[in-house]
Amino acid sequence: MFRIMTPEEAVTLIDDGDCICVNSFVGIENPVEMHEAIYASYKNTGSPKNLTVISSAGFGLWDEDRNAEGYIREGAVDKLICGHFGAMLSTKKLVLEDRFEAYNLPLGCISHAIRAQAGGIPGALSKVGLDIFVDPRIEGPGINNISKDDKLVKLVDVDNEEFLYYQLPKIDVALIKGTAADRKGNISFDDMYMSGDALSICQAAKANGGKVIVQVDKLVVKPTRPRNAIIPGCLVDAIVIVDQEPLGSGYEALTGSFEIPSGQWDMWVEIIERISSTQRHNSLVADIIGRRASQELHEDDIVNIGIGIPESVSKYAKQSGMLNKITLTVESGGVGGFPASGPVFGAMIGAASVYDMANQFDLYDNGGLDICFMGALEVDRHGNVNSHRGEGAYAGIGGFANITSKTPVVVFCLSFTAKGLFVEEEDGKVTILQEGSIPKFVNEVHSISFSGKRALKNGQRILYVTERCVFELTEEGLKLTEVYPGIDKERDIISQLPFPIVE
Image (cartoon, rainbow, N blue to C red):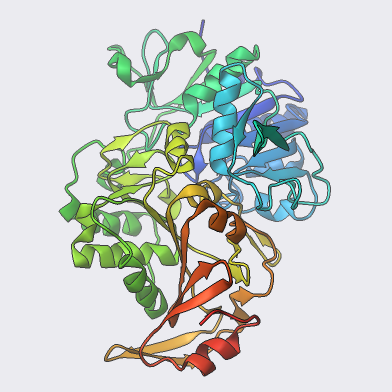
């Protein structure tokens, strides 16, 4: 039977050495007050300590002094297992200093492994991750020098087919953020951007004899409709009520509180950017790439568009009228709206449906997308892409590996060089005025996020769209299929590459 508790009381349910699984998505839907109560308890008593923390998509607030950053930095956590570290500003630096064990697994594979544990199965099989960094034959999931746990990802053979087997530590504590609890402890997510892995996390914790702690904004007398009660009260041990400050109409637009026609998407994007203190910077390079990449869209396509340069695809899809003829999706579970960006990445404007994250990755893993547009840090002569690990920096793979693993058409959107690239476009002709100092096309990528070899084996069509040309992956290597007007092929492309291409 659940009890109403303060954050401080709920922390006493967490024992030293516990494995906590957090339901969040990058920077959204974090049970902030619970994280801060854990930090306060650790500072005052030294407990809970020796924690393992799991999160499919990471948990942070883009602020190194809030949420879980404090207790991770002070030493309460021994092991982190996350799909993405981008919003965890302090933590992602400490990872590279060998301060604690840290592992990066594809977001969808963590989500599916949680769901498997909820059903009493130790782990989840997947072809996602084969031939990329997480494959034990390549690097394995450990990020730093002390992360040597070889039980998280194993190569296995089933009916003469290779799979990766993802197995997480047993979850002891579910840490969840919801909207409201009724008098029976049922938890609704009506004002949330997503439900994520919430139900699976709770079921896994209870299957292991653990505890479920849910932070909510309010108690309600009238129960929600049964279909809207994501977590039944019988699974809940502690309900922590923390009054939510009014979000305002901008953020309410992301919860589905009112209908937003597609014609108003641009308006709401601007409102959300204004109140979240983020602004999109116009970039001619991104515009050129997005305009060309958007030409790969077809009516009725189901699509995922990554953050960064790929976001410009939607701008030109709107201009051409294609945006209203396709279905956009986002990893957190949203379908049929317009993905938000910045601090609220994972939310969706005008979504038609928002379901559990594991179900979204079922769609991605089974080839349910028609096309995706992804960014890239590096591309090598084999067509491999590094999107998750820069020089001395680490963000994580997120949903990238799942999205690109089986989608029939994958379009990588990237500049030819970085840091200082300056281009001009006039009368449809592109001129490279200054090259960037960092080449994006290299002999070998530092770490493999996407395997060209496996894509060819899968029969996928892979394009690399830049501001000056387009490459396509073939059995012989990268083939130069388009050179934009104004570009000198030899000077601006061939001489800039460290490897031969197919012409």
